[in-house]
Length: 320
Image 1 (cartoon, rainbow, N blue to C red):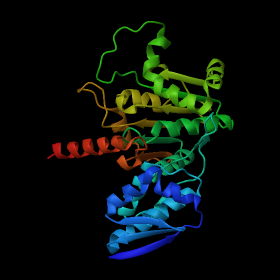
Image 2: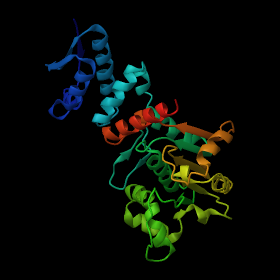
Image 3: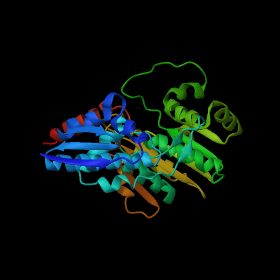
């Protein structure tokens, strides 16, 4: 039996580390089968040596996150545990603490995992970036945040958001209204992200000026997009022909981000995914970066992470 002590210099950190009703510390205790308790500015950990050492690494990582001004969540605790278990505790501190953008409510948008941090850096450094990974990893949300930042800094003149209008395994039937009304249901996630970043009034004002365009992928044909930040969402549902058409729209002083999840392809069985093909063809071209997310980068409810992992394991078993 080993016992180690961590001195916490700021008592306000204690509540964050332990969480409401000790929620955070209970997760750590359950993971490592240790006893953790606080006493007069100290955190004491008792258990077998390896488990105690890992617990110390996790708590020190959490303190580092708090010192950056971040609010601890259950997800960040679980992420710290996964990184420590893989021997990557030092890398947690490499997560960029630079604010990507500030939402219209004043909330700073920052990467929350190492995968997200590398994705943000990649978008800043490259002209075309692919973000491939499961739902909930922030692929689209962070891309929209960077687009809004570039637009507000006058680095680009327009934000263009697009996605293929492919139904997710169901038929929506007849939809009333004009063409824009008919495609709006497909584009709703993009609208939601922009509302978060800009607020509805600024969004509507820039839409009317033509500075923001949210349109189905078919609208991109025949255009050259200069001075624009262009995001293609749900790219796994493009055909190879559509993907090539989209990529060749790139104009001067523009940036493209293509996001998708290759496990959620809704194309007919006979169709190949343009996203899968493009990541194979373009992987060695300078100025093009491919970022792959895993279930550890999921920043939604823990069950989303568990669901993604369960499906990955199921698909792996089906191969054999």
